[in-house]
Every structure is written in C-alpha cells, then in structure tokens.
Image (tube, rainbow, N blue to C red):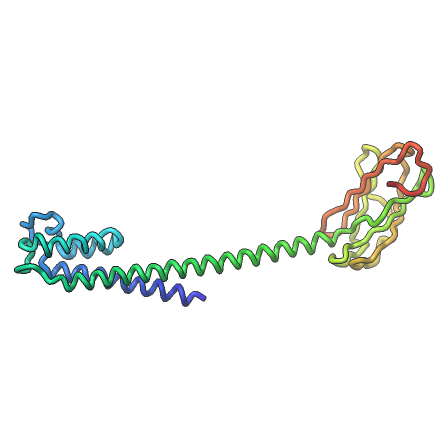
Length: 247
C-alpha cells in the first residue's frame, strides 16, 4: 500500500532536484550575475538562484521563470549573452514546473490515500471496541421478572436472574449479591445457588437471605457479576403489603 505514495514522493524529489539544476545551469548559460546590471535580481549569481530554489522552491522557481522572460526580452543588454536569448531553456523550466506540480498532485493524492486508509483502520478499531463493549454489556446478570416473598415480614426473597442471549456464560461462584433495607448501605448477602455455570438465555432461581423492612419499607439489591456492570434493584413495599409479588 505504501508503494503508491512512495512513487509520488520519489517523482517529486527527482523533479525538484532537476528544477534546481536547470535553474542553475540556465542562469549560468544566459549570463546572469552581471554586477553592473540595472535589475538587482540580475546581479545574483547562478549559485544564488539555485540556492534560492533549493530553499524556497515555491517562491523562487516561479519568480525565476518570470524574471528570466523579462531579462531575455527587455534587459538582454545586461546579460552575458550577446543579444536576445531564444528562451529554449525557459521552455524546459516551464516543463519542469508542470512536472513538479503534477508530482505534487500525485503526492497529495497518495497522502489522501494514506489518510483514507488510516480512517478506515480507525473506523474498524472503533467498531471492534464497540462490539467488545456490546458483547461485555449483555454479559450482565439481570433480574428476570419480579421479586417474591412469602409474607410481609419475610426472612428470604426469591427471584430469577438470567444472562442475556448475546452474553457470555457466568459462574455463579463468582457472583456477589448485596442487600440492604431502607437507607442502610447494602451488604454482602447469602444466597443460593452460589455455584454452577449460567449460560446465555438461561434462567436461575435465586433464594436470598433477607430481612424485611416491613410494609412501606424499601429494599435494595445489587447483583455484581464478574468483570461486568452490576445490576441495581430498588423496590418499595406497599403500605398494605401482605407478601407475594414485589413490584
């Protein structure tokens, strides 16, 4: 993939160096560098022009082409060459300018090609990260249905949990469940079953040791699966709660 932009850059470099050489040789051939010339730029030596093109190509090469045309038509008396110059080397300069511009276009296209490839790569990585996050999130252990109790002053709760269909299997031995009433901080609770593998889409009935806050009280359950996001369940018992389903 890097071969295409390399060609553009290589052609640009070659034409850049050729343009420097031709400016130097052309300036020397037409006699630029006359210390008595009326045009101050005509007093610059061929080496100075070559160095200028080398350092500031975009400025000095067009400027040289412009000045050269003027020298060879209006100010040829100040040139070392005796008489109006034919300007054949100037055609070569123009050809080089066009060639370098063409090479720069190739380089720009190659650069865009690399940036486009980098964009595709970044998009692919973003999709992989998104997919990984989506894959991890469904691995949560979530409540499936409602909470149940056998009385308003229960000592245990039962409910079902499951792993989403697109998730990954979870070992119940690695799961923690916290329980709290009213405004108390939830604490580690005893539950069963606390072992076995729960596969995606499979339900598991949980029996949780839990003290009742009484009718009108609040219960908080926090299910913490391994390496995933916890599920928070908050319910408030109705004032006339007598047991059964807790909505």
